[in-house]
Image 1 (cartoon, rainbow, N blue to C red):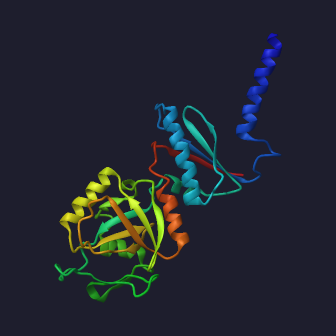
Image 2 (image 1 turned 120 degrees about the vertical axis):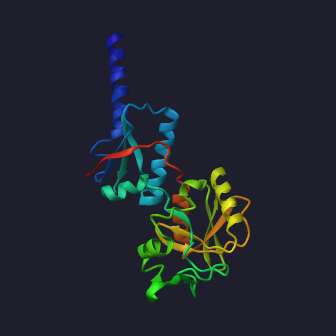
Amino acid sequence: MFPIFRRALFLIAAFAVFSAVGCSSLGPKTGTRITFAFPKGEHIRRERLAELSRYLIMRCSGVLDVQNARVESVTNDSLVLLLPEKRISMEDAAKLLKGTGLEFYHLERVATKSHPDRPWQMRLPTRTSGSYIFSGPDAKRIDSQRHKELLLKEVVGWPVEKPVLDGDDVQPNASSRETGKGWAVRVRFTRNGAKTLRDFTRANRGEYLAVFYNGELISAPVIQDPIENGEAYITGFKTRADAEIAVSRLNSGVLPEAVRIKSVRTF
């Protein structure tokens, strides 16, 4: 009985390894393995590990357009994520750990009805997919689509000026809808985010609250009334596909654990 029992255990273990790692005939012939290292000396509970796995898989779908990513193995100090049939760089892999790329900035340097003497004037787009045009000191002209970094630095004041809200303040339940001027994404804010938005909009009527997505200005509405319900529609998406990509990224949530990328290996 004992030898038979040992052989059964061996077969079960071999099947588990085969299922997790695959073999040359059935596994992907090309792809990427990303190894994430856990904080040194920190034990991650099973529930948090499951959350981390789901988060990384959803981020692969939303950020890297990899629909079949899976966790290949887990040890006490690392997790290996397999991206079948997809070769990516370290730079692309790093996007999995970054925020959603959604940021809300107060345009304190842009003239308004109450503050016409500010250094920058803003002209709204003349069409759905058009640019915001900023005119400023020394006859400088900044196009929001062509001069993204310059806009952030000179008009917004980045990196000194920090966003009022960002993707971490948004709940992972965004949705898209068509409007009369293109596509919009509906977002609901977290409890802290909703309070920040409510307090800011109460104190800044008539001001511009600019919405940046992945470093690009997509809308800059004037605050007419306080936003009390913790919900907002972000307009400025040119197509349904653009809006759906944003929804996918927003709904991947917040990184559950402070992991880092240890290695990225393609095959």
